[in-house]
Length: 229
Image (cartoon, rainbow, N blue to C red; front, side, top):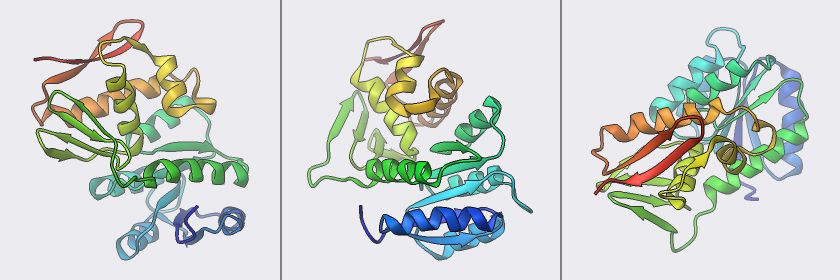
């Protein structure tokens, strides 16, 4: 892992910063601390970070509002933290653009594993990018870039991964459970609304770009990617 990687930790609990930072340092990564949403946004404007750990419940701006602000201008990976484990909180987190969601109390070791997994996916670019094409859609898999009619569409890492899996299975109905396992893995099994939420976001983003492809819903099963030419 690149020793220059820097994570922004945005949480009002000092102990959270100390525990996560200790594990990050052990992995050769750096961190900066923000103790409220406003401070987090300020640091993001002034510095370059590779990933954000963002607590939902903070004084001033809630983490959800901070996430929305970040997503207006950046596709930086975001891991959201919450003391609540309700499914609706996880869905909201994914809906507004978070890449991952962890419930407190958590193991700092688990967070570092999640961070390394996300950063490895996002930052591993090869000299010859792996291109995936379907109709007027072009995806640079390693660079996490999506083009429709040669126009770049801003996608989060999870959105790209879900779209890539559907395109690779073009014409085949893929059920929600398989998508959850392939794109999210670990404890997301059974939380199928996460897939529906991400599909809605992808459809909304591509609608304005005149796509010649579509993601069809197959009632009670899942989704199918098709090129309409």
